[in-house]
Length: 220
Image 1 (spheres, rainbow, N blue to C red):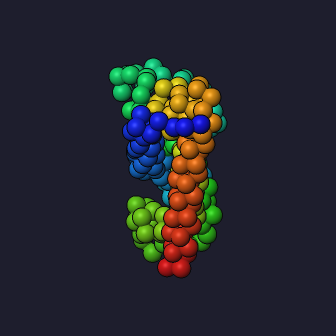
Image 2 (cartoon, one colour):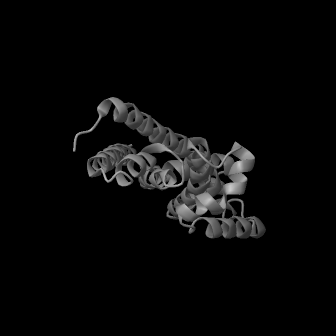
Image 3 (cartoon, rainbow, N blue to C red):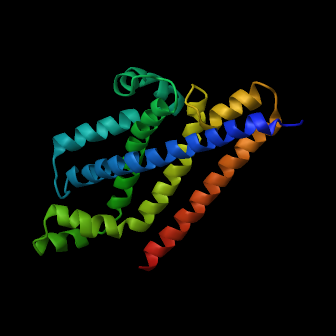
């Protein structure tokens, strides 16, 4: 099937830009918030640096409620909140907001699980030397878990790319919307294949960079 590139080309480039924009904003904002939330989960648990049963129980319950919700349901369920914050439930900004919220809770559990693997004896030694909790977090906890954290964030990056495609199904824009509108609904399998190929390239590039950064962190 011949493709009218004069018409499709600009739309495809816009869709790629929207997808990359959604992923980058989600990884930057959701990545930071997820890191903070994950550290709080680890440090407020029993025996942690800032052990607080009430705070840990509340945070743990919140993560357990939101994280398992399938994104196609989550992005519609969070509609009233998205409308209040963004002003609309349609388009790339609305989809990005839902992506950030979902990624924050997903990343928090990955961060917590990686921090749990750190030898408690190392943390106790730092506490015995008089290091403050904030200093232990910044100079010991996060650096010690850096390599697995990079792999965890790489995993989330791939998941976020998948979620942007889902967001396209409900008016979120990006490659998912492009594949559905110009591929699936027009029975143009070539267009669909092009969108899939671009997504595969994005994922492979992210995995390559993530693996390289993780190896570099292990060798430091």
